[in-house]
Structures are given as structure tokens and as C-alpha cells.
Picture 1: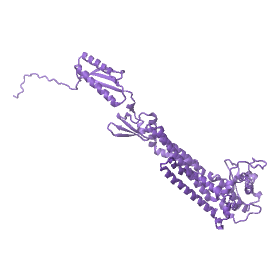
Picture 2: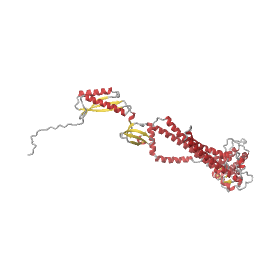
Picture 3: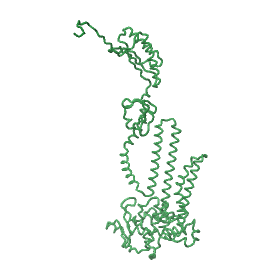
Picture 4: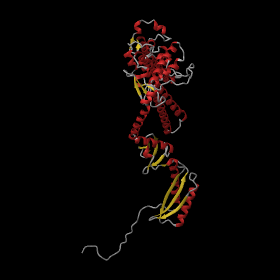
Amino acid sequence: MCTIAVALWLAGGVSAADPSAEYPLEPPDRSSPRATLNTFRDSVDEAWKLYTAKDPKVRVVFARARGCLDVSDVPPLVLHQVSAEGALLLKEVLDRIELPPENDIPDTPEVTAGKLTRWTIPHTEITLVKVAEGDQEGEWLFSSRTVARASEFYERVKALPYQPGRLGGHLEELRSGTDVTLIGRLVSVLPPPARTRIGDMLAWQWGALGLLVLTLVVAAGVAAWVGYRWSTSGLVGARFGAYLFPMMLIATPFLGRVMIQRLFQLPGEPALWVRVVLSVVGSAGLAWLVAVLMTRAGIFLVDRGFRDARPLKKQLLKLMFRIATIIVVTGIAVKALQSLGVPVAGLIAGLGVGGLAIALAAQSTLENFIGGIILYTDQPVKVGDMCYFGAGRRGVVEDVGLRSVKIRTLDRTVVSIPNADFAKLHLENLADRDRVLLRENLRLRLQTPRDQLQALIAELESMLRAHDRLAKDPLRVRFMTIGEYFLEVEIYAYAMTDAWPEFLEIREDILLKVLDIVERSETALALPAGVRFVEQRETGVSSEPA
């Protein structure tokens, strides 16, 4: 693998074309295997000359070489580094092996005539393929498998000398670290064992990478300890202590990148893997910080803006913030996975199928949750309301939760009804009435005279209309029916209250006054009792035995 310094110097974005070119916007020629090989080798050689001269145009030129590699399978997070390293490694390999004569390398006419889509350099596994789709459709590039095995190819040919007239990729010069401006002097005075090659890096570079990891781990541990002590200290701003550790995790990938690319400029796969791990840590820190911020924002809003709101509204607000937190955290996770090259589209499709299975398994739970939302939006009953539910049952609503409604019945038991079932019931909310019906059927003795009955009815109606806690309309007292043993008079009025205890007081007062009026009218209430008259007649027959 090549050094990260190449990624810094050579893999930067192309912001301008080469002003010395006759046609600055002319695209590089990658129309055939021959054209791609020539473009690749010439670009790397020219880039090295510009690099040694510290000419910023090196990025433009080296981008042409990097564009000759198929890096579609490389995670975006390390795309520049991998493409830069792969380009220099392949240049080293190509300059050390014997290539076929240029006329034997397929050019555009041969590609068209033979309908070629791939070509392999003879006696090697280095393959160029024609891109079938995408932004580079029709161009010939080094295959993704070739790029992935570039380091392997280099290890197999690095002992070979350069072919005549070839310059190489200058890989070892970059790997030595002596060109790193910030620590070049220090590296130059290190003892020879420190510059011993171990895998993809030198010994001092392994030490620098270990120091980097140790430094970041210690820094994260210190941030966690300080944050905990701060948040539990009771000092001013203690609430911000919970943010210190996730903020340190967010800063970790940026600190790691500065140390890897600018301070030590470490090469090789180990440095790339450290960057990948630090990126994951940074994304986890960002998700953590967002979750903490949104959770506290939800608590603040509920406590301050909805302090006197109903419990269900508070629960729904908290639930909305939780759902929003999950959505944002999921978005951060998806973005992080994309930067690591994970096929998010396929993953989401798989999660969709799994989510469908979970939804089917949790159908009743979801149904109850939706029922709770309906109860909140429609609000047929509220906490504290007395209502009739089901088959004439009555009770006071004590809680409307996300899964069930709890009602305390007149027997002082608590009935728990799933939201989905409760929303389907016929509900009669007694607390929403503006007045309470007072309807009594007064049964008088069957022997009550007509004039006495009429006087009684008039006095009862007069009493009701004079009562200050009864509505004047509708209000009536009527003789309704003649029963088997009674005369029935109906009292019909509305008490001006919506509270059941107060209604009971009004009804009690009315009934006591009714009894007084009945007593003064010299009549009485009918009793459901019958009298049997037995008539005895003399038969003239002796009952004594003969």
C-alpha cells in the first residue's frame, strides 16, 4: 500500500484543468486498453515530477491516473486513499514487468472489431474491463479485482528491476516518510531499526499509529470522566456535562485524520482501517448527541409548554420526540453505512421485509396504538369523565394509555380495555352533559278524586318552576296513565348542573317537596298490594259428620 501522503497531495479534488494544455477541458483517453495504459503511465510520471516540484497542478494530473481504476466497490470514506495507493502500486508493477509491444495491445479498432469487453495483460492477472454503465460508461479501466490485488502483485514483483526507460511509482520513497515536512527531520535521525519494514508500514509508523489510537482512547476516557463528574456536580451548566463525551466521539475522526494525514502521513491498510473505525466512532457520537439533545428538548417542551395538559397528550408528545429521534439517528446510521460502502438499498429492502413480518406479528399492538391515537384525536372521553361503556356498564376514566384504557367502575374495581376494542364501543359520556334529566313517575292511590289530582298537579308544577336550580324549559307535570292500582303522574325537568353529586342534592330536595305536597293534598302514594274479599253464605248443609 502507498502512503496517505499521496492521498493528501495527489488524491485531492480536481478544481481546475491544466492551463498549459492546448485544450484544458479535453477528457483523458480511456477508449481502449492501449489508450488507458498510456494515459495511466504518462499521468503518474508527470504527477511525480509535479509532486517533487511542489506544483499544485499535481492533483489535476494524478486525477487522470486515478480515473483509470475501477474503484466502484471501495467505500467513499477511503476512496481517495485507496485509489491513490492503487495507482502507485500498479505503476510500480507495470514498470517492473515486461509488457507486450504497443501494437499488440488492443486499440479502438480492435476493440470495435472484436467486440471486446475485457483484456488481460499476457502472463499476468492484471485485467482491464470496459465499463458497461454509469458515469464512465464505455471507458476501459483496471478492474476492481485488479485494484484490490495491487498490493499482492507488487509484493511478487518488487524484487525485479525496472524495465528500461521506466520511472516506477516511487512507492518506497514515499513509504520512507522522509518527505513528510512536519516530521521529516525527526525521521531522518531515527536509528535504522525504526525504519525497518513491517508489513505495510515502517516500524516508526506502527509506533505512531499505536500512539494515535492510545491518545484518542485516553482522551475519550478523560472526556467521559469529566462529563460524568460535571453533570453530577450541581455546578452551573452541569447539564452540559452529558454532552462532553459524545462531542469527544464526534471530534475523534477529525483528530485522527489530522494525525494520520498531516502529522504522521501514515501509509497502508492499518491506517485506513483505523480511519474507518474512527469514522464509526464519530457517527456513534453524533447519534448519541442528537438523541440526548432531542430527548431533553422533548422533556423541556412537555414540562414547560404542556405542564397542565392531559396525560395522554404528554405521552403522545414524548412519543413523537422518540420517533423523531429514531428517524434522525437512523438517518445518521444510513449516512455512515453509505460512507463505509455498505449497500444501504439492499439493507433497507431487507429491513422492509422484516418490518412487514414484525408488523404482522405485532398487529394487535399496532392496532391498540392506532386506537389510542384515535381516542386522543376524537376524545369521546377524557381522564376523569364518567361514562357508560359496553353493555350498560358505568365508571370513571382513570387513564388513557398507548395500549389500553383503565376505568374504575362503581364497584371500585379497575377495568382495562384495549384501545382498539374501546374505540369500537358505544360510549355515553356523562361528564359532557350541560344539565341532568330529572324524571320521576309518581304513583298515587287509585281512589284519588279528580279535582284533588288536578290541584296536586298544579301545585307540583308551580313548585318546580319556582325552584332556582331547575331549567324552566322543558318542564312539565302530567297525568300519564291509570294503572291497575294507581294513577301515574310524570315529573319531567332538567337540573342546572353537570355534576352528579350536585344533581343528587337537587333531586333529593325536589322529592322531599313532592312528599310534602302529596301529604298536604290529603292523598297518598299507591302501594302494590291487593285485598281479597271472601263472601260466606249459608248452604243449609251441616258440617258435622253424620
